[in-house]
Length: 321
Image (cartoon, rainbow, N blue to C red; front, top):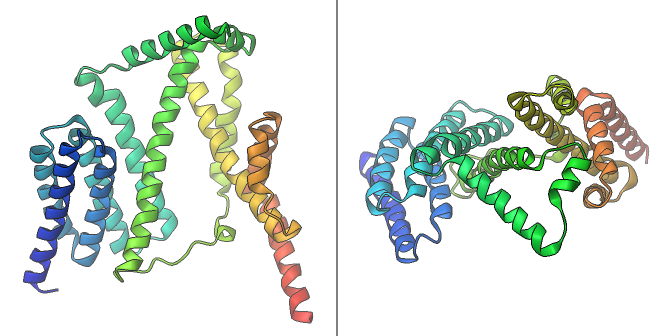
């Protein structure tokens, strides 16, 4: 690509970012979360069309524009650098021809790390300590209990959990999940735009191609089983670490279980039962345990082998016909 066209594209993308930030300022920073999510996508597109070095130069321009035009708004101050790291890391993966799964992991991992650093390091430095936010959540729950007459603390105590500690755990988990969702959204949009502008076609991902990772499944099972440790160890650090790890492990296995249910419904029952079972599990918590078990069996191999046999049988039957 010639130098003039490269400079024109870079200037146009900076102009787009500047216009979005100014519009966001005029709207009282109502759309700042959406604006910062555009940052990595712009960097990915521009870097993929040119070079990683060009993407880095554009990143510096975006950083300056975001800080100056954004009037040092906290959201821009924190998440624009995160978006730049994600964009450049993802673009590097595109240049190295990483598969879509690896690119998705890059996007999710960088944003999760960014959310954790922002929440537990940067926000406290700016005068928003986590302890203060958790105290406000606890106060809101207590006020709700006094109004409705439903004692949340008592319910959690009956289940063997301390409500105040669980709020902290939920806060950490929600931070991680938020970062994961943002990273996944960036991945999906990047794949779509790269194909739409004919920069690079990363191909489609068939859900049948999503195979479980045996090592990750065993690690996730170990993490999930850590839920029982806090009952025997009276230490706050152990409590938080084990509880957070067990929930994350359960989420991983639940994800594998959900994939198995979808594939089993489509390939064996010829019906989409996966979504129905997951929705049903919201009302019958014991089903969550069942989905986690199925997820472990799918991730470690047995249920995956079973599905592959079913697919092979179906193909043989179609060939005979």
